[in-house]
Amino acid sequence: MKKVIIPIMLIAVFFAFYTPKESNYKVYIKVAAIVILMIGVMKLMQKVPSKNQEKEEEDV
Image (cartoon, rainbow, N blue to C red):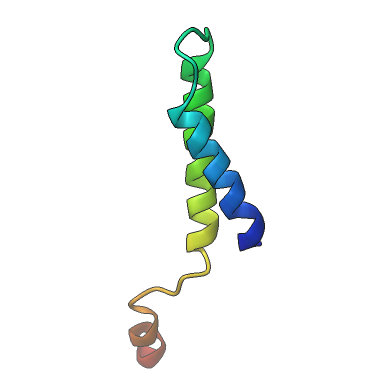
């Protein structure tokens, strides 16, 4: 899964920074790239355990 998400995120970052200035849709391209980047970060962070996970398990 990470092998697919990371290249997609890198492509989105490339388009966010290197959109042509003459383009009428540059704002929409940047917004779409940022949304794709945030979704990718969210998907990657789902697998990282919480710092408080051990304390919560001990309390139960």
